[in-house]
Image 1: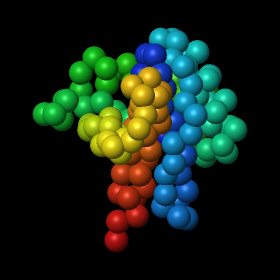
Image 2: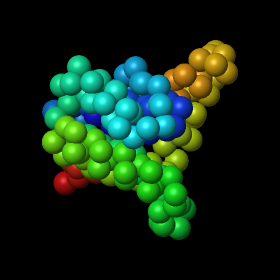
Image 3: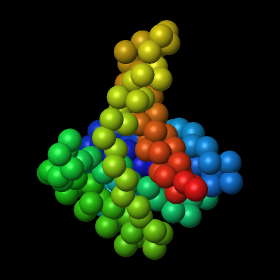
Image 4: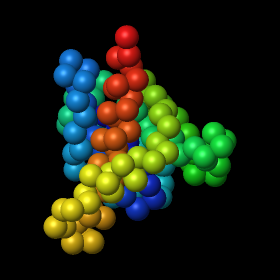
Length: 136
C-alpha cells in the first residue's frame, strides 16, 4: 500500500507485485497527529491486506529533505512501530503533478478533483515504486 501523507488528506493506493499495477483506493482524512493518522492508515491497510507500506517522501528538487520530509519520516516510524510492517520511503516529487495530468480533460468539478488527487498521487508513487523494483 502506498501512502501520500498530508495533514488534511491521506491518499492511499494498493498494488500487486504479480501484475505490477497500482490503483488508488479511498483515502482517509488527516488529523495532524502522526499517531492517530497511523492508526487510520493501518486500519485501511488491514482491510486491503497490505504486507508492505510505501510512503511518499517529499524531497526538495535538490534532493535534500525539508521540514515536511521530517514529518513524513516521523509518521513512517510510527507506522512501522505500530504495525511491524516494512516501510519503504520513495521520492514523491512530481507525483501530484502526475495525478493532475491524469485528470486533465476530465469533467470533474474542482471539489471532485481535490478529493481524488491524493489517491492518484499515491497511485503514481506506488506505480513508480513497483516499476523500480522489477527492473531487469
